[in-house]
Length: 137
Image (cartoon, rainbow, N blue to C red; front, side):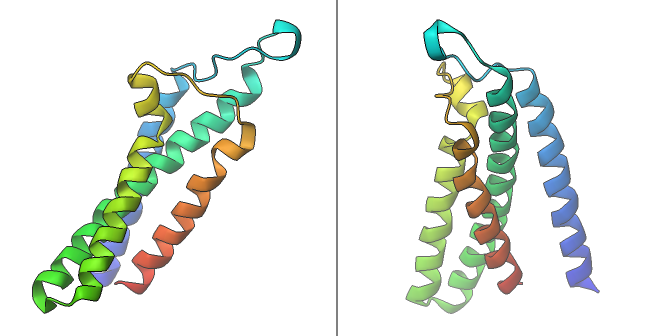
């Protein structure tokens, strides 16, 4: 019963973080480059960076949970493997934070126009984080 509550809380948290990131990213203009012959094509790139912002925010949320789980396991057992998992999850958390277009835009930079390839690493990180979270419950 407790696991169902925790899973429900995680899902609600993912949903809230995703919606918040979506609304925050929809108000920003990420693509600042010029297209062929100097024509600016922002429309198709906006969706990719919006999805990337949502996925990066969800990844950061999931990785904070994973880091706390692995830190708790390390404190209870003291095993080097669990400490390695703490380092691994914190490294992925830092990746999720610095690759988030909301943070990049807040720092004053603009997107590079990578199209769907801008969000694919975050999609795979999200899948890996969900898998780690599922096997760590």
